[in-house]
Structures are given as structure tokens and as C-alpha cells.
Image (cartoon, rainbow over all chains, first blue to last red; front, side):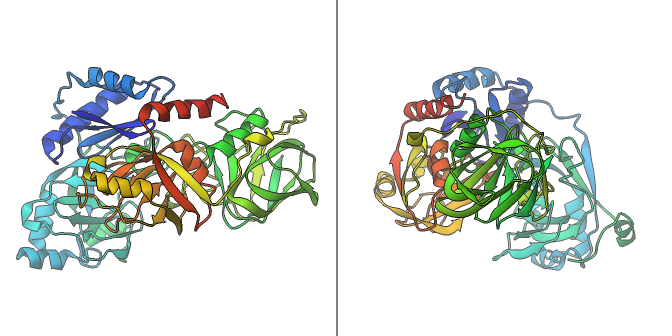
Length: 227
Length: 303
């Protein structure tokens, strides 16, 4: 664990310099522990793959004091057993009208579209970070058979709800946005919902599984076939 | 009891000090670009410092009142008219029913702030009134102020006559030195690159908005191509592949993967908010102890 200056009133804690499930679990455990303190002087706590940035009240802690404080809080950090965590099932219509890169991913992997769908939807994914857009969760790890790198140049508009992969990661676009990920399908699942008190049903601690559905079910759920 | 927006101007938004504690979901902080002007306006009105305020980025805003209150206009030096009479900014003005308030030409600086006694009476979204258009959060309906919008306030008959001391009103010029704390990936910039960074002059490019300020000048190189995405603090200086610094401001993306050489002091970012495209920027290194003292001094004026 390494604490560094981020800005005049924030620090960054690095837990490792490589992405791994173990590091991610450390980040999540530390994040949970820091949140549980309910310390109002910790203004923002933002986790990512290998680090956490903490913005603090400099009238309560100076840089030296916040380091001492964080070191003492995190020194006996235990990685929590996440066994009982509920898996969030997300219905996805994997059809070529909306999954415009299905064929390309299949060709590259030298397998059928059905196999791509089966492989993508059979795994339970961990969330490693949330950002880029509100509710945009970076999930991993995609099965190596369908790993596909980002497009050379991003598309101007990816429709909201598009389910995509890039390298070993998978994600859902929470709103219309430019983007360079490979699109496999579409969902009506809301990742950023102003009517929820929590704003998003997904947090960094969530576990996600994709559930393939038919075109009929997708349309019944209010899905739109347009890309 | 409200102002009717006769003319909204090109880019006027409702803001406050920002939306906190949703950043872990990718929601940006947003908030006023110039906290000095904002806090001064609230202080003059004896408001709560967290009250909301209008941030006016281009001129030509016109409001019509239908009840008594007091307003205060700070920030960029502009032509302010109340019932067609030219008035001073950085002081309070008593407003009566049917008064007409006009923010005309901006003369110096970039952003004008208009506060009303006790703030506009508009419900907060997720703890804040700050407008972030790309997230459809805050403001009246997640967007900028439009013609015919209604800005409600609570009637106030108390007479307030306060004026910001002349010597504390900033003069907005076209050159600015920003104090920088080396931080984040500073180790990936060798001493030669750091020397270049601190001894060059940069120009503000047209890519300057509430998200970020892109500069043009001496190219700076990091030994890293990219980094594992991590949370980005206010004022962080990203160095993308083209070597031209980008200072990340109130509506920045919450996480990002470019190397960062350091962070501009937040209180200097407030000054940057008033600079025009084409202005000259220099960087000066500061240490953390001094930087935190400066920040405390700044907020002590208002508390």
C-alpha cells in the first residue's frame, strides 16, 4: 500500500500496480472499511482498479495527518469473503440487429455467433471500476476465447443499453455515447436511474451475469431494435 | 415570488459548490467554476455558502422580478443594468417588484455570478443544484437556463447593503501563473521534462469548458503510454499522447487513464475559470505544506 498526493486536498492509495482479482478485492475491502467509518472529513472516496482517491477536509487533516490516519485504519485490512453476494442478472438480446459486432467477434475467434453468446453469458463478472459515464461499470474478466480489442476509431454513437466487450472487459453503455467497444447485444436494464435513491443498481461490489433473451421478450420489455 | 427569465443568454446554468458522494458511480462533482466570486456573493448577501447561484458564461441575460429581494453580482466585470440604470457589481442591490435586471457585455473575465438572498428556491437533485448537462442532473430540468424559465425565491424585505472591498476584487488579465503540486505519475516525467513544464509558457486553446482546459505549448513526455484508470482530482494535469497539458475542472470524467504530472491548486483553478481563450499560462511548483496553508487562508475569508 502506497499513499501519494493527488491534489491539494486529496490523496491516492495504490494497492498494487497490476490489475488482478486479488487487488480488486483489496480495493473493495478498503473502500467498504473507509465508507463504514462515516467520517465526514472524508469528502469523496473513489475506488478504481488498483487505487482509491480520497478527498479530505484540510481543516481536519493535513497531508501528514491523513497519511497517518489512513495507514492506521488500513493496516489490518482483511480481504472480505464475498461468498454471499447476490448476483445481478441482466437480460440481453444478442441479435445481430443490435449486436453489430457479433459476427466480427465470432470470425476473429473462429467460432459461431451462438458460441460467442454462450461464452459471454456463461460467466459471472466482477465490477472493477465505475466511471467514464454515470453507471458505466467496467466488468471482467471476459473469457480469453472472445477477447477482442477496441475499434481503431470509436463510433460516434453507441445506443444506450448496448452490451459490449473490449479486451478482457465487458460493459453496458448507460446512455447514448461515443464509444469504441465491440457491441454484442442490447438490454433494457437501467444502469443510471434518477428514481433510485442509490442512482445506480450497480456498485463496485456487484456481481453481474448476462441472461440471453429472445427478440420477443426483449421487445416486450420495451427494447428498441435500432442501433 | 420569482424571476422570470426574459433572456437566458447563451450559456447560463444553476450551480452550487457541487454534487458529492456519487463520484464512485461515475457522477461528476460539477459546481461553480469560480468559487471566489461565488462565495463572495453569498457572503455579501449573508447567505449560506452552499446556496445556489447562476453562472453566466456569455452576456445578454435579462430577468424580471415579481417580489422584493436582494441580489448580488460578482465574477467577471460586466455591464449590469437595473431598470436600465448602470450599476456596480461586487455589491448587493435591493430589488423591488417588477424590476428589470440585465447583465450586458462582459468586459473583463469570463464568468458572471448572480446570487439572490437565500438562494433560488429550486429542489436539489442528489444533494445539489449543480447542473451537469451530460448527466441531465441539477438545474431546473437537468439543463441550462432557458427563456421563460421561472427562478423562484423567497420574498425578502430585509435591507442588505454590502460591498466587496475594492482591493479584493480580482483584476482579470490575460496572463496567469498556476501553482502546481507534483503528484500522481510525476515520477514518469524525468527532470528535463519537468524543467520544460515549469519554464515554458502555454496558451489556452478553444478546448476550454466546464470539463477541462486544454493548453498548447512545449510538449511534455511521460515515460508511460497510459496508466491503469484511476480517479481524477479537481485540477489534475493530464498529459495525453500529444504532450499538451489538459487541466481537469469541475465537470471532469471521474476516472481516466492518462498520466498526470500534478495538480493545479483548486484556488488557482478558480482564477483560471475567468481566463479567456488565447491567454498565457505558466506553472510554478508549490509544496504541500504551503499549498494547504494557502487553501486554508482562502476559505478563512468566507467562514
